[in-house]
Length: 87
Image 1 (cartoon, one colour):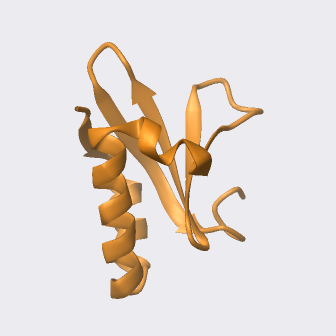
Image 2 (image 1 turned 60 degrees about the horizontal axis):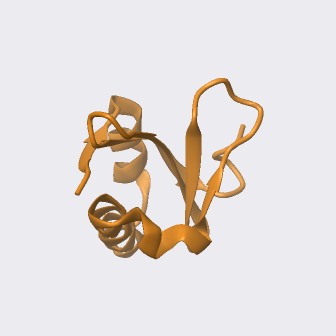
């Protein structure tokens, strides 16, 4: 099981999202922390960045995160709508 950690910007992003979608995103993040293989159809490794960032699709929202295998940490970088998150 992984530990979830959020950057300050990710927390701000989550607060801006409507409450029903916040709940769904939180549920998906808990599933991701417990067993990332369950959501493997919704996870893609991002290209064009130096770090090993991944994208989790949750409806029209995207969660950008980094998975640190050695420390068993999922570091959530950004959360946002699909039309805005990649800018």
